[in-house]
Length: 390
Image 1 (cartoon, rainbow, N blue to C red):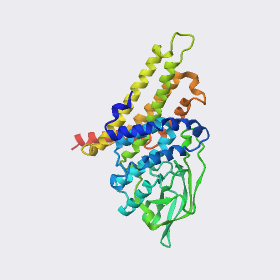
Image 2 (image 1 turned 120 degrees about the vertical axis):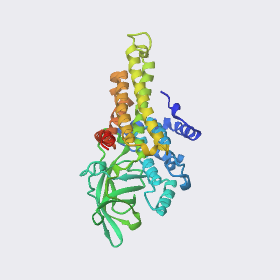
Image 3 (image 1 turned 30 degrees about the vertical axis):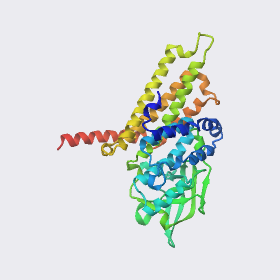
């Protein structure tokens, strides 16, 4: 199916054209970055140079104030060129978008940070820890922040720090005993005591270099304590996290494109013409297309509902459902693509095996499937209770 159906305005069209000019360059290094587990710095630098990384900033701060629909469209496109690039820059876009939409910080801090972003700064949240698992599960950070001589001293270790080689700023969560809450601290990469320890030995999204962030008595100024949460942030509605399903939908689109092209080109001597004329191959392609339609229409519908101020208050579990539906359908699409291509899809030189590994990472990005299903069920149960038990 064509994404042109989802392009709504000149702004989106212009950016799609800008990104299309990067397609060949992004694709050309995908195999290398995957095999060597090497971060695609060239791709990220190209996006920053284009002004992509400041798009989520409101216009008054020097950005474009993109909508969630803009985010989804552009992130899906980047990810179809290179999944690791899409997921990595998506976290930056998501963090910046949420910060300024919800005004999570004091105005002076937001304004100062916006200037940094306009000058090329890249940021991600460092919240996951080996001892607590996903922060959305409610675990208390083992990383500690203690006030000493007017400064905060942080010690701990964070895992899954996506885009660690390129980040200029980290938003680190730490437990503050005196506040009985989770503090968030803005820390620059060159701060003494902060280091990146390479620990990204995985099979999926290898190019993201999501290494460990190590903090050893890191001193943070008082003004860099930017947030305090009494409960896990995962409980908040955050539409900017739709960059996650957009990424995996982009990978599914890339797998579909490869498989359909293969089917139209491959002509074994056992038949006359390409395999695309075979009924079973056409059936598989047709099912892929249906799954792409299901995923894309649901994702863009939810994004559009959030962008509509009159409909936004009625959103309950649609954001989590979009992630669940899109990531699971994306895995099915990649699987079907591999069935069309056959054993050749398992060759290390074939991009389908990379798509197959990368798309599974979506299962472990928030929110997880079990939490989404549970919340949907409880919402339905409470809705009926409230209706019939008045």
